[in-house]
Length: 184
Image 1: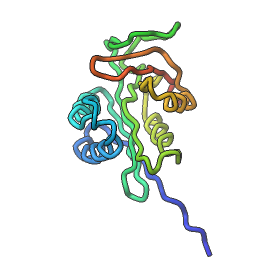
Image 2 (image 1 turned 90 degrees about the horizontal axis):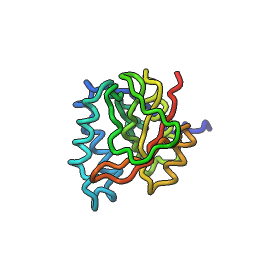
Image 3 (image 1 turned 30 degrees about the vertical axis):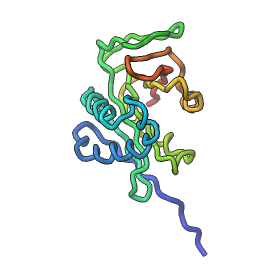
Image 4 (image 1 turned 60 degrees about the vertical axis):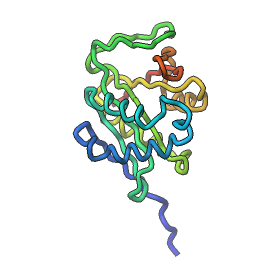
């Protein structure tokens, strides 16, 4: 008897023009993944997330890697390119030697990565991340991880990210700010 192959992960890359098509999927996954967090914190409400998604998707070269297992959406990762005039607002601490100089092609703002709880630990998040990075022309990727999530920070460090500082915007959690070179 032949062994049944495991679930098949398919990752598709989308750009801003596809947002109307995929937005309902992104919002549904967000609602399912952040149901607990969004219950007690304004930052995690559907309205706040939808606003962030629209602002970020309006940024230059927005891209999204959407993963499906056997045709069922299970997670996504997205971000956009920083502009040359980006000012690093909210940066309250910087590591020695952190280079904050920007160009229109230097830094990819890696905004979100979300995977349904039932498929975590299977490598899907890493696959989504690497697929997203494979489409990026920028030199480096920048992300924020909540300071209160050291396990998530350790995961990003295993993926090659290094701390560049601490950021906090009004009304948001405190974040560790991290960079990683994008290898082509």
